[in-house]
Length: 325
Image 1: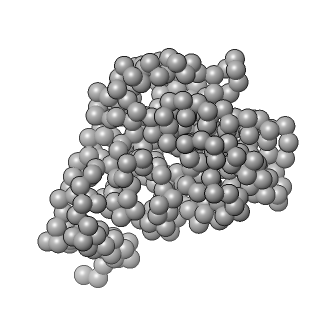
Image 2: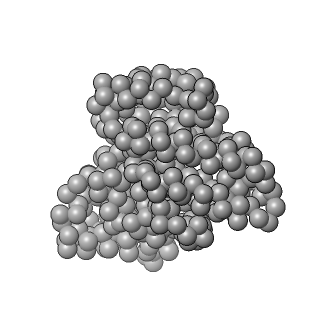
Image 3: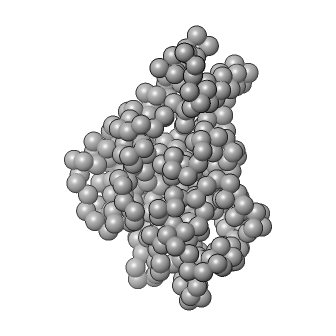
């Protein structure tokens, strides 16, 4: 029977992965550093969140960027104590961009707030050992541009922020997000073009998200491979934005593509972010979670991902056709 196009694509990536594995076996030895975007736990005490992650075999956490002002910020010393007590490292900081700190805003005072916000997250990230800060070029929840210059304003604002990244060990990670949530930058191609427009050496990396890729890219594996060494972090959720394995996402393909671009190298992360089907997912940031639901979500996500990762790592030439079943 003739294979469908998506099957042919998976066959192509599988062959590339097996060739890579045969030629560079040492590059497959290290497993991915897995992390969890903890902001989805909302107002739950961080200590409880970290304990949940550690209990399920995670060693890294993506903290939420909630350092807004001197008076309304997280307690960095308490966070460092919590990290130390649970022996957890920080993958990065998930920047939270709303209409109040929109890099593309028509209002210059809001753009100044966006610059101040980014600077504060960089300082905080460096203090806790974060490797990256996610940057969203326009507000989440704003799906229509204010005018035809939104992109130019966003570029200009991020270029101002670049001076702070340049002085820091924290890297800017531009995240393409589906058009149902933001007005700017939906694909990897657009993210690369945006980075080129900013034209600053401190602005280089990308934060990928396979849920957004599923909706905006022609092919997820190609999108991951196109990112190449720019990809510093990859958010994971299934096709329904639930835990991996709860939808129709081809996780094996994601894992193979991620190995091909070196996502298992130190300093690069695969981060779970199963948020549910919210147009404005920030609703989770300010609510109390159902602990039993979150416990199951973390346990099932990590277990399923590690199972599929092991299947891919052990795959041989004789298994090629089985990947299409």
